[in-house]
Length: 252
Ligand SMILES: Nc1ncnc2c1ncn2[C@@H]1O[C@H](COP(=O)(O)OP(=O)(O)OP(=O)(O)O)[C@@H](O)[C@H]1O
Ligand SMILES: [Mg+2]
Image (cartoon, rainbow, N blue to C red):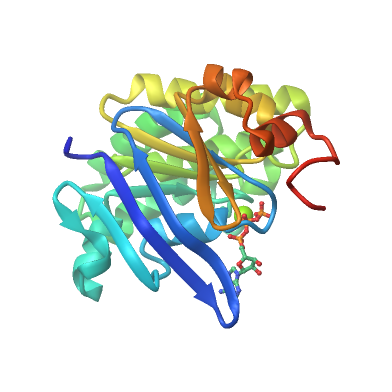
């Protein structure tokens, strides 16, 4: 298998009596944007947390460059986590720090850099999302879309191989949504070797930015394909979701 791609094999996770993931199989190709879609509560965020090593699956494998993440001890898992950047749903910036300091934070935590090198890294990250002039501001002085961009810069500043986005456009207006979509696509295209995984229930955005789409339903990936495959499939679950219909196999 290609190093860098992630392969999820028969992943299972339950919370008490609730089986959330019932055997998820998915290949996340290197250097592409994969979007996982599915209804609210189907386990998309749980899947991301498992990938980030924040939650342990009950069984199954996460294969990454010949290693099985599920077999790693805590310290090896922490090291593995360094290869991932995460853009949280609500941006999750520190309110008490400027945008510059928010982005410098992961570098200060994990890398011993001279202040000058640190500034070069932070400025490059700020510039890559068009915020170079705004580093001195506090998060509340930015618009929602700018905060989202700052969150992307913070996730990127340590040059992760994998960039995970949880619902990056939920709650944004249509123009801001288009803007964030461009940001995800642009970041992908300007970062060689980056592998992006986006969780979304925004079909419009998904069809626009995805190289690959996987649909999670009742704890399993029931469909995988390109945006064109999604547009043309007869799969009744996918059709109902894409068209937002009440009638169909997905029960409200
Ligand atoms: N730590 C936890 N303990 C118990 N149950 C949990 C935990 N985390 C998630 N769950 C349950 O797992 C299910 C899936 O949750 P998850 O957050 O992954 O949904 P989701 O697909 O991300 O939904 P949304 O689109 O609304 O964000 C939910 O029923 C949730 O209550
Ligand atoms: Mg979620």
